[in-house]
Image (cartoon, rainbow, N blue to C red):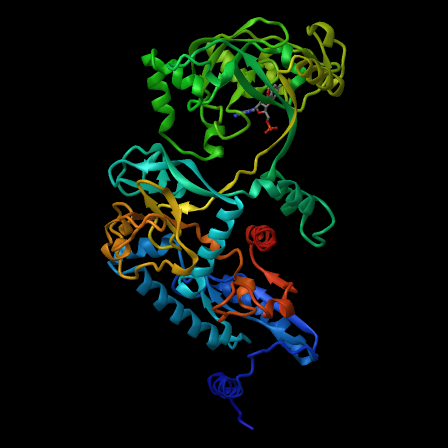
Length: 564
Ligand code: ANZ
């Protein structure tokens, strides 16, 4: 018996005993009850912080307790090793992201081992390892085949001085974080995953009883993020022709509204700066063109657009109200988002807060069409009176007058349907997931660009497309553009002529969407997820972020579709 507790000695003895016995390595043993305790894989930022310690200790205690009770427990660990911080560190210290990342992994692994966590290290994965990200590329190709992955143009933040794309966090007060240059919005091609196909199913999951124990607050956040919105989509007609002599949008300007009951209160329409009618009108209207340019600067997030001052410019174009046949002036408004609904709104200043601010500023008529019980409509107290949710009885609305909200919406939808100009529609706030990043330190997107054949998928046999490890980003664009080795000898898989390699890489959330399945059979060279998953999945305990949990659900769905 020692009279002093020497933790170093005790721990050293315990660690060497565990190491000698390889105590935490587990195999698929069907004679025992399995338990899979998984923690969100850490970003190798440098050193462990107390959050890591707290998080991993919970699963460690659970693991030890269950093992003592005869369970076969898997507790794996890995590294979410791609991403921007490694590039920023490279910029600061002149060290390639690979070196910085692997050194951090080694250091943090040592710290975890010193903590004595009951981890099966034989299953360790690092997402920047080609043996891991090869499967990101493989699944991406499968998703392309099935139409779950597709290419379209996207709006990005562009730093005109560094000639590079910036993440939203790198835009400060509308300026680039490094150069201070005014950031522009630019449209460039990118790849998307069709998560909107799964919106209804996700919502059912979040609002139903399938997630017992999840806090209501968290579920509500997810519900708002998915953002199901039931309303009416309809068209204002027009005869505005483009340069080619054809009617723009076939002579229909569509809008989406959740308040079809207010359709008789429309006193203007507003379209997004990127809307085809705005582009058309700007050609002969320098003031409008300047305003559209102005809208291109500043942030791209929905929150930023929602809080900025409402501004607009009239286009001089008119559309026809579908029920009254009156002419309605079309404005370009900075509060209208091109990416939501149809990129255009019917303006009802009396009942919509944004339209109200807009109408007051520009002296547009305000027409009340809903009467809320016991309330007097008064502009000066409008904010007290008003609410998008203020529903009441329709007034000043011809045959719709006297109806309550629900009946009025139904009647208006019916009238529009009769004219072939509209119908009820569900719109989602959830967007398809843009997975391309114009960055170096991530999974290369397995595409080759050919002048003749366009964007051609890399053949499966040529995977992985390996990311060079020796680049040092200098802040001016993606260093892959300049990396000879990455492009050398690239030919089009279809015609064999010289071609260019895609230099965009994948969002790192792609990596962290399926790692928990890889731990079940981490060395398998034949399959992304193999045999071990039959035994270990589903996870019994997951300690990690909700956003990951949601992506895990989605990936399981992609998986089912790809393998079917
Ligand atoms: C007229 C109206 C009157 C509206 C009213 C609301 C209140 P949620 O619930 O989020 O789906 N809207 C539609 N498309 C838009 C776009 N691209 N950019 C900005 N706003 C857009 O919101 C639906 C409402 O958001 C729609 O209903 C429309 O304004 C606006 F008293 O139409 B509403």
